[in-house]
Amino acid sequence: MTTTQAVSGAPAAAWPVRTVPVVGETTVAVRRHPEHDAGQPPAVLVHGLGGSSLNWAPMVANLLDAVAADMVDLPGFGFSPPPHDGDYSVSAHCRAVEGLILSLNRGPVHLFGNSMGGAVATRVAARRPDLVRTLTLVSPALPDRKPQVTALPTAMMAVPGFAAALNRVTRNMTPEQRTRVSVGLCFGEPHMLSEREFSDFVTEYRRRLGLPYMVDAFTKSARGVVTSYLERGPRSLWKQAAAVQAPTLLVYGRRDKLVDSRIARRAAATFPDARLLMVPDSGHVAMLEHPRVVARAFRDLLADTGKPLPSAEAR
Image 1 (tube, rainbow, N blue to C red):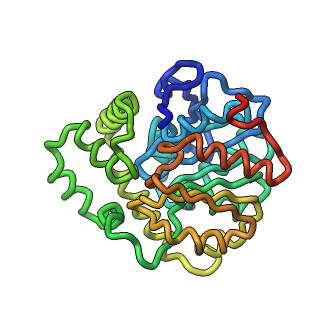
Image 2: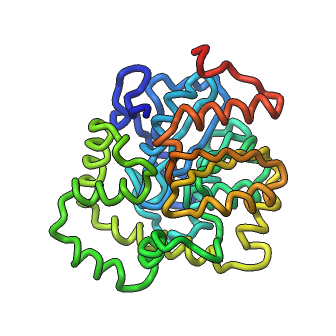
């Protein structure tokens, strides 16, 4: 497994972070690799529920010659402050991502999304086809009539009072213990996580625990995902998926405990111009667990759409 150590040797946690105003009084933090090449085609990467821009670092380190990547911290996550209006819905996160893309002022981007970020990216691509060149979704949080049992505790975070009760139960857990639980849920093979990566995750979790809005951001975003599952008509995520015009790469892990990989077939049949990659040993975060595999699939997507790039092996 590739670690979060960058090609330049700088740990991902030390990659430069800047703050960008995007919607009204809302701002987002954006992380870039130290060797970010603005001459490459622009890419925007959106993390999942409870994650941050760090989740994309291993994959981005394998695509430095292919894209100029801006890894965003959604409002209330990572280094981004909470939204000024307290809105953590999927549509609100969508507006923040749209605002970031417009702020880059470089035309359509290669848009990536994982989990909740996949739902956000799908909505962006459907609403604003002019902003999205290609779409890459890793275990996107699209509505499933039969969610996995292992995903129910996360969904329960959307229920008023559940988060407070859970905090009371887990208040004596150390950041290391909390991180280990999260890794066990998100990774297909948790034992493959390196000590350096685990330490980075613990450091980030400890920092987040000190933020007064951490629980609010998580619970309201979880509620936003659940609400998006219930939306009908033109706001239905499946109808929006069917409206996406950009060439799309779908990545699923067969060991995913949060998104049932069996839904991949429906997703591949719904997005009009889709390619599907199933990663047998991966869980919910293939771009963290198998960054080179996902990076290679993205290069194949570009080659398939007439935009060939150097192969990973040639770098």
